[in-house]
Image 1 (cartoon, rainbow, N blue to C red):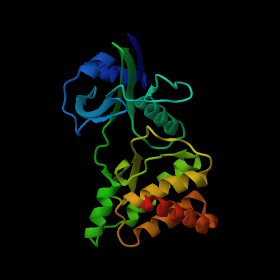
Image 2 (cartoon, one colour):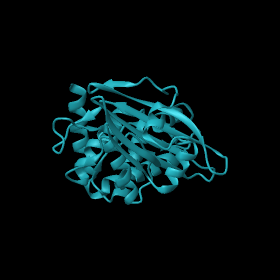
Image 3 (cartoon, helix red, strand yellow):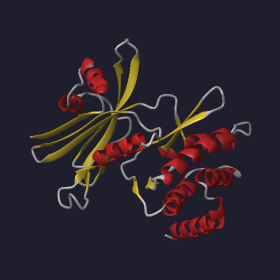
Length: 259
């Protein structure tokens, strides 16, 4: 059995051990209900379990335990046997973290080969108090008093930040953008499902790809998309490329709708 275990820090190691989850095996064997139907593809499966542990002071902490088996992607380094998709997601979380971009808080990543099956576990903190962008935009469309501007600015800022470093999310749908609104009117934004994120050729090319997906799939009410685009262009320093970007987005969206 080949085994790899990575605790994000010594604090995370101690915390998980305190809760009887200090090893790959204990996390893999933990009983729990999947919060949604496991995803069966790539010749394997991938599922998510919500679990609650206790901090050293006794306070509860919700964590997400993501488990997968034979759910891999092939790359130039591993063209035949592939690599667990959670491995790429964990690396991308670390990449954002190193650039001071708020993201998921990881606790553990591990993988093993057992009886010919490639298994992987990724543990992150639950985004308590956050709602996905699709739900927020839908609510805004039904409630004229909803302050949509307080959400659009922070979302545009987050996406502009990852694009500055040429990170292409590659699956930027509203359900993958999580927002937590504060009482003072501010909002905190986190992106999830980072397993497909990679470096693009340029900030412009990643903008066309990601924004095209976000426009097509999110339920933008009224002129909220225009407000978002203006905010994004400003925060990304791309005001001079507005016409070029709008043209490229129009062409991309048109091609997608014809399929």
